[in-house]
Image: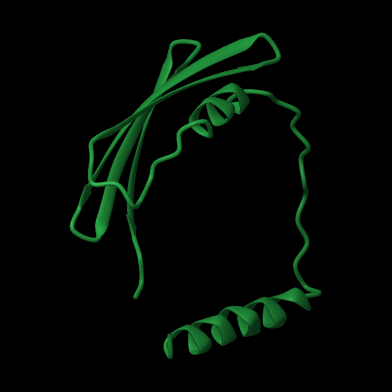
Length: 105
């Protein structure tokens, strides 16, 4: 935990230094799109238990603005690491995700 304080301080200082940059001018384009929302909803339905050493499966579904998505996930804990992956499909687009979780002691 001793290494967390310097990292937090560096992040805080970096935000403070760049927050007062008055010479930066950019154009912001507002794009109103609902692409990917159904995938996000679907993938958010997968939850894995870091305390279980059993093979875990999950399934999720999402719907937003006439778009449908489905997610399938799998996870397995090995020693202190929970290794998981998901596959999501929405409107003929397929995405993959991979996760590695561990507890800092």
